Length: 336
Image (tube, rainbow, N blue to C red; front, side, top):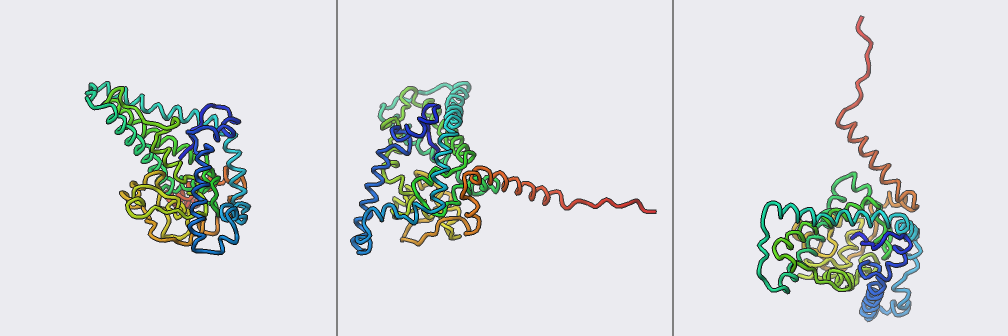
């Protein structure tokens, strides 16, 4: 999910994100993920004495992962992205979010609001749930497009070129990739919120905690930062069909072909379940992170992470054009 930055100061976007409860990097979300990691360590160490010997810190922050060249690229890219694009993303979010006003205006132009007489808590509950579902569907759909449209895939490769997962890998996203996520989620959420306002009037409010939809806040609290990590935390049974666990997303990053284009959801797994892209986490699997073991090495510099997608997308366009037009016809001299 894109970072919903507040304000247009790049320095605030980097430092202030740890104090902003609407940001995934809010210090409390990070702390809770660490605490959950400690709990997972406790249960795993009961069955693996080797973990006890290595210790908790070694389990949470293995050197071979956090000093890997891929992780080092994550850190550099994350910092540059935060400093360069905070203003642009804030503006894009503001423009995209205006979809609710556009749809509200269109609805009012063709129909009169019934303003259903329901208790306020019912209107708030429905609005909160359907708005979260709509935003999440927008993210799922954007993710599906990024995997299925070859030119967009070149930009999404930036994220999938990671060879190890750390929480910072969540920020290893090309700006155009992020922009698509922002636009799709804002449009879907805006349309649904406009209809809720049409049905319930001023009662169509979103129940929030710390200025964030309570459902998204709960998701951030339940180990969000473990989804890009080596710590295996699955949701099984019906829970694994309703919500995306860290293990679901780790499988999404797998090089194994059976995991390709699977588990595209952000908060809810129901979209993957409905559209056939769910890979259920029935048992622990050994996961090698990356794409194909060949291209990953091309994406270890900040310059490559920004520019290589444009180069490869252009090559795809050229190749497609040659396929459509066919080989050039040689110019033959006139017959004598």
